[in-house]
Image 1 (cartoon, helix red, strand yellow):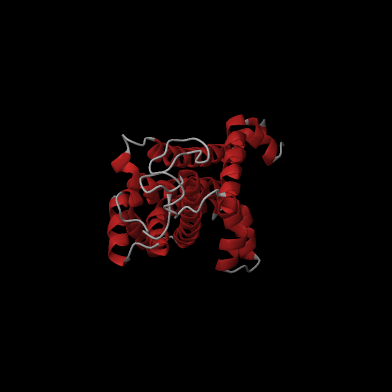
Image 2 (cartoon, helix red, strand yellow; image 1 turned 90 degrees about the horizontal axis):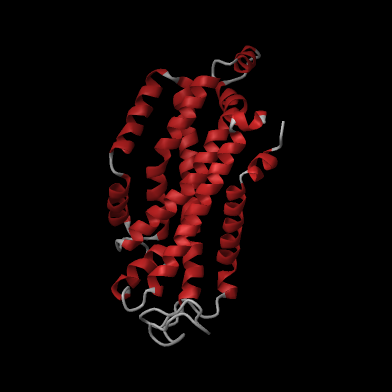
Length: 276
């Protein structure tokens, strides 16, 4: 049986996506130290200067260096994506595990609540939540994670419904294992494959959702994100195309790379790939 890495590297696009993610993550982490100018400085250069030395991606309408702002904006967008995906995954696993293991009225109640969250348009509800509780980074992360867990909860529930009647679970139950042991030690580790794939894709979805909120003006005004850069540059799009092009390209590359890696992880956990 081939190893997980051997299966993953068969898909060259997935390896390419992983390399892109590593590069973006390194640039985002080292952004404050490698940025040639302060991303907040309005005296970094001429107003709306085209790409070229020393402003390799140009400047915006206030003379701020776009390359420096893209570095910081990428870090903010990745932070929101990772944090929201982590919280949504934790909630989704917990809710899905309870629903799939205990079934009965607990399953009915949880699934009805899940359906309510899935019926309401996610983007619209995110705007309402952020507008009501305040447009800061913590509230944005919590709002996105609150709206992202239902899909994962259904996946975990389906896995638990399949695994809860397996022989290894019955054997542990006969030996006196309690419900928490069965859920978190016996069943959950065997249900993680689709969870990992979905959690990876959740990162890209959260980044797009945050970008959409920022573009509509309900993002955190104190933080530079790629979506906020697009929102601020829309007024000068014709006069300074680079002000919208480079943040948009950075966001597209990040989300595309994450989705490609998700496809590669799907291959890793696919039984057919394991048999090759």
